[in-house]
Image (cartoon, rainbow, N blue to C red; front, top):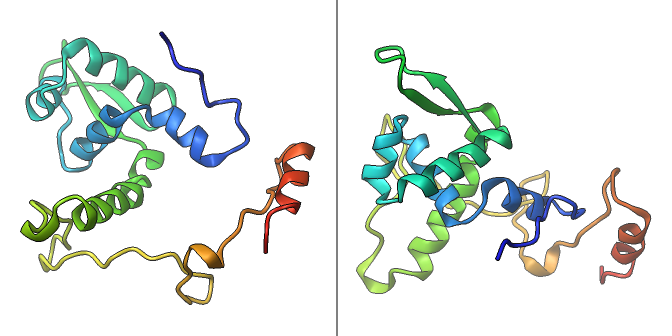
Length: 162
């Protein structure tokens, strides 16, 4: 059974999930960010079925997150890379990794973490903050209708607390 598309929802989270897909999409992005560009490289690193990988790559390409180019050494093969939109997902992957490292590994600690390539020091923990740098928690934020919000959504957001 095919799941419902999120592309018609007036929500950046829903549309982002539609573009990235499921967990495989995030893992493909992780590998691409750290240098995997060959189809067989993704298969080897992830253990993903070839047909699933092909479908996921097609979706990431269609949504402008990844690109496909002929391999310079073997024109019969393709290489996959990140578009600028794909590169900007680094912050999303970092947030997921930091959350998972904190909440999913317990006392053993995480098996890996992102670090500054030059200094090898861990990347700072991401926080939500206002434009002035003041940290914000869940109780400090609310949703506000943006310029493209439909009228019904604008009305719904006006009813939110805060």
